[in-house]
Image 1 (tube, rainbow, N blue to C red):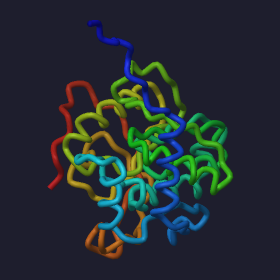
Image 2 (image 1 turned 45 degrees about the vertical axis):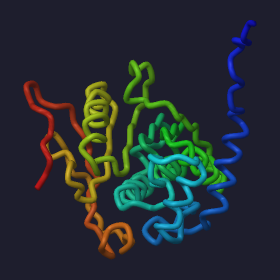
Image 3 (image 1 turned 30 degrees about the vertical axis):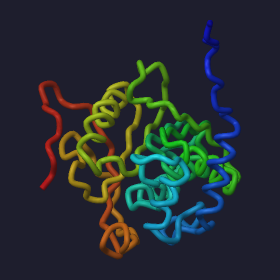
Image 4 (image 1 turned 30 degrees about the horizontal axis):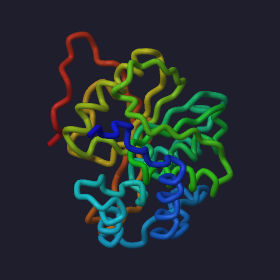
Length: 244
């Protein structure tokens, strides 16, 4: 007896994207951000139910938390900075790394960027990005590949990252990649709401804001948040250590 060795059918990518988009639309509400009223987003109204719904939707444990469904302080501050300083991105190619729901990417597009790419490996974030871009009537290219693992074949004029320094593993992967982009003469801007693993060396502070936050998410109503320009490490400089 012989067995059929034909490969198993692969999931339909379009169907998966449509399912993720339906999930995002169902589990969120369209909201304006008090600190960035120019941008509307699909956002969660409660924290815990959406966390559970995300796991149930994929029917497995270990699903990335739905960071895309909340307006984090770092992203809001960076979006505010781009809208208030449009020359930073106007006419330029912009990458928003770990974009989440896309508030920074959308702000870059509204500020006149020639092309905006938003990268996030979470399929729900990709769905939210597309919905939010359409909601704000802007064009944003969405990448779901892990760009930090790539051979750096792409080129951007400006790279932005709203809030990526919240855990050691994330910083170990993302920060060296951002430093390489800075070494290529790209402007690299990051939001810093005081996370434990924020970069402490080779940075230039561009702005400082008091951003409204959620008590459920941050345990406080406001976070002082900086917009930093990330510079290449000076020769011989060691990787950042956690800030205390």
